Length: 465
Image (cartoon, rainbow, N blue to C red; front, side, top):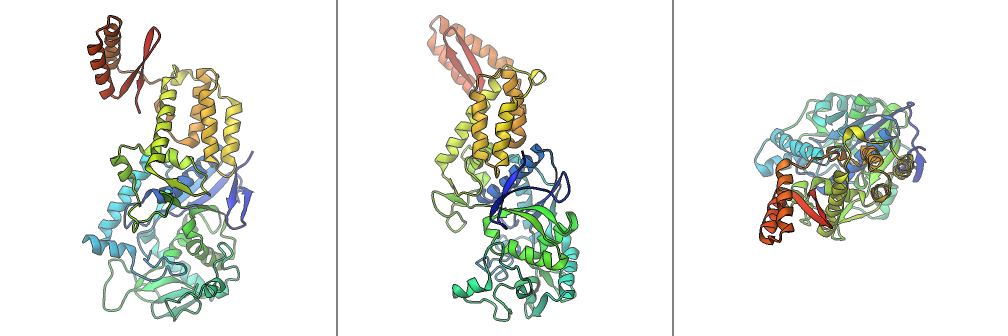
């Protein structure tokens, strides 16, 4: 049994076969830290987590890198127009009256906090674009020496006409632009799809971030950072590159062109793209006022793990519609799962053997193009099965290597003595019909984060989640 992924490059589901036996080199496009990362961004980051966990579940060693973009990502993100507008970091600094350094520090810290709350696996390294300026300049120099670049008034550009496979990933080429009768934003460019490798600082002004280069003072284009960092940290060829579907048309296509032109090798074997998250059946975005953050969810008393569960309810290649009701359903399901696991009368030291049957069903699900909805279904089937509790616990701990819900913290959970004493006192009051005091104690126990469930001849105390 091996992991199969849909490859955006070949438009097929294919078996992952690493270039190096037993080792998978993977890169994921991370956030541009000019603002809070929203729940649409985190759907893609969650996909990276699911892939890494699945690879490890299959026994692979994973060398995983994610970038932090802190320069060069411009506001002109329309089709074919990623090289115009203002730098998002510079604009954010101006808007908030802070330095770019302060903006980067604040939003990077918030991203890391949210990343940890969602229990996403950390990469070996978060590579920050401004820490790889030398590598980016070196890559541009290699491309220049091979004849792939030209210089115009506002910067150094990559000549896409010299890369024969340009547009293979997305089908977005110069011809499709012409068919759409698109207005070219920079008439000095040789071709509409040519992209900036190095942008010059505007004359008579100073940016927060600019560097000396062989071509003049300026800053790297957005696309070049990923290739340069991958070359430095993972080598000139990787196995899997992950990102949002919005990157497929321009950003990733440009990465392929500059990387393969510089190295003469196939850049990434697989391209995995996560589909947009919708909100209330429509587009999500800051202009729509519905680009919710994890802080927004927590302010409404939703658990970060509930968002993680919600992401698993839809396949990553299909649209997933966020509504508060859907998130509430995910949280309720997660709480029921937590309650079931914490109720097992098994300690961590007394778990049984895993159920090979359920592990294999789960493995088939995740290896089938990261089918997390099916993996959740298998998990619930296990919980509802008539297997012995120690076998359930051992198996759930195994599945949680991918689910990432933290089941280990729930196993062998002991009710605090104070709560247990109150529950016993309540039961005595109830047996003799002192209902007001019994109800008062139930409310007190509820405030302490526990619930009491009565049954014929007894009661049970459960942790509320």
